Length: 396
Length: 59
Image 1 (cartoon, rainbow over the protein chains, first blue to last red):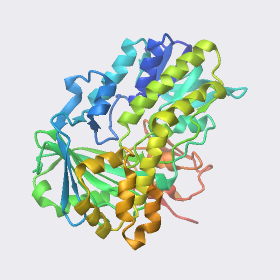
Image 2: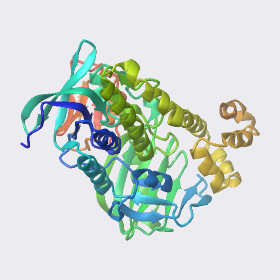
Image 3: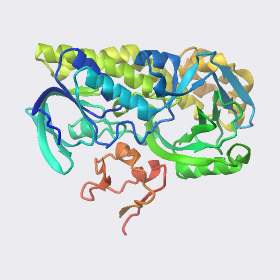
Image 4: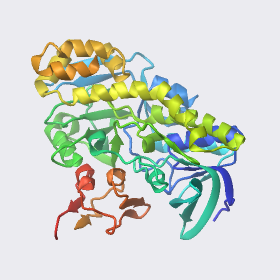
């Protein structure tokens, strides 16, 4: 095995976009960083529909062409009655990325910055002394060892196992998690291969939606995210595919993915003595569409800056690190909490009410809503229906 | 009684993230279940996208 040192300034558990962002930032800041990934390959298997907007792409900074599977110029949203709303993003609207390549590129950047990166190295326990996290127990290729650190970053995805092992309460409440299932498919007959498609309705996807995110050459990620449903997510997606032979008649399956998607329940506190939680592990996901790439990247950078200062000052106490809570909540948390309210309203709408929204909303308005903006306009629309008066007030 | 169908399981870890007792762990080799910690609440079964988990009382 390639040797690791026995002691680091920062150990990051999980080499997804959040973990790699923190690792890169801290290494650039002059800290000695170890980035651990339990999987044998960083970025695979994906738990992601791989769609990002231009604003997210900018955050990654010169995203290499090899990370992009397909450029996207818009989105088609289908209401339960099949009536659709088309949202035009414009020429440079969005991307469907290739996570296998993107994640490796992000980890490569962390490595270039000076972080030690180790795949297939599993953290099995957290070492705590006098109330402070002091290291981890890890395992790689059957070999067990302990590594010491001044600070531990839990970026281990929605399982959030590391933070909870360290004693923090980050368990996802069932009501705030979507059950996700996805096929990457080939030989699809797509309505518009330059647009993503979203299908809503209580039959198709209870409290959620089906998505088609094109990846070029008639391939796409075809997935579903649902919550509190009677049957497993896979059953609903299989039914959708069966019911739409015009799209899927000749389709092949290239890959099968699943995962839990945190869609709310933001944590007031994401730090402890010698511990910081980022990304899906801290539920940092947009609650209406379930995308986490942008949030992971932003939170990783925020956390990185505060960690550098804390380690250099020799104070990694919960109090010193709590600046991360404040900055994240100011920059992201409050906006995302408004989006969570939006989700909580939309998920209570029946099919007729969703159809009514499709009649009355423009694509532009819908985009604003997903960013937590102009929710008042939606509230005004819903409050006209007596049944929704109380619900709509959530948006005021 | 807690059971997982390992042929169905995609090792995605959704069950781990909702387990209130930390009785589940996603290892490289698959899901680990600690029956001493498990309270058979069934949340893992309800989130599993594959329907791979069975939880039955008093089996």
